[in-house]
Amino acid sequence: MTVDHEQLSQLLKVYFIMGSPNCLQKPEEVLKEAIAGGITLFQFREKGTGALKGTEKAELGKKLLAICRENQIPFIVNDDIDLALQLDADGVHIGQEDEPVEIVRKKIGNKILGVSAHSIEEAQAAIESGADYLGLGPIYPTKTKQDTRAVQGLSLIKDLRENGITIPFIGIGGINASNARQVVKAGADGVSVITAISHAASVSEAVNELKKQVLL
Ligand SMILES: Cc1ncc(COP(=O)(O)OP(=O)(O)O)c(N)n1
Ligand SMILES: Cc1ncsc1CCOP(=O)(O)O
Ligand SMILES: [Mg+2]
Image 1 (tube, rainbow, N blue to C red):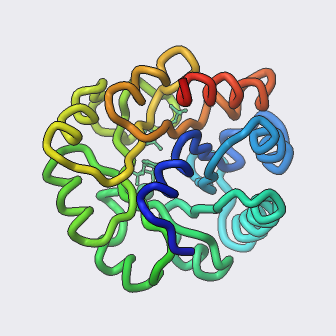
Image 2 (cartoon, rainbow, N blue to C red):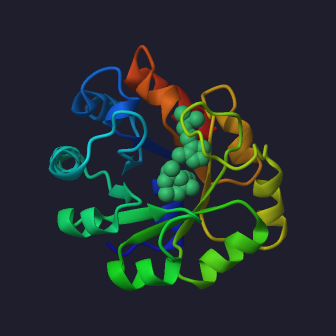
């Protein structure tokens, strides 16, 4: 899948990330509801306590990919490049502790490549090595990921734009409908969200609320 900056910027508006440990009901149902609410991109992140492994993880990935395909929502795999290639996913997301960006770029060809960055230097290095978009965070405190860097607030988002970085990027970490607007106002193309969507009483309404804030 080849996408230009503008298409990617649109895809990043409401970027839903989840795996089975994040869900209060069947992941397939959560994803269907999130799509009905209007998510623009999905990342399969099967990580954390109770996460599926091996064949079970691949089987769930295959089911979630099928749902995304039926609804024309691009499907990104977190960390696991082999699974992304096996499923023929649309892209992968890697962090600073994962495989080096250049190596992943070679492995995945023109699939979408997202990279986490926590400073201008990491952002520039990721861009030079072939990232298509950046994930910046945690913007706000989060309970979902234990091994995060320090909470950043909006400063890195503003700094990147002030330093002429034009690549699409999203904020991640503790984002919900009450703070999403300020993330986008600071310069992000969109928001990446786990809990505010996956734990919502109504998943589709939560997505809808987030989307309204991001597109304001
Ligand atoms: C869109 C997006 N941004 C950041 C991350 C975090 O990636 P990473 O730092 O590699 O941490 P894990 O998610 O692998 O625990 C992400 N997954 N997606
Ligand atoms: C994967 C990840 N990377 C930085 S914060 C985070 C977790 C975001 O989850 P939530 O939206 O529940 O705070
Ligand atoms: Mg990672």
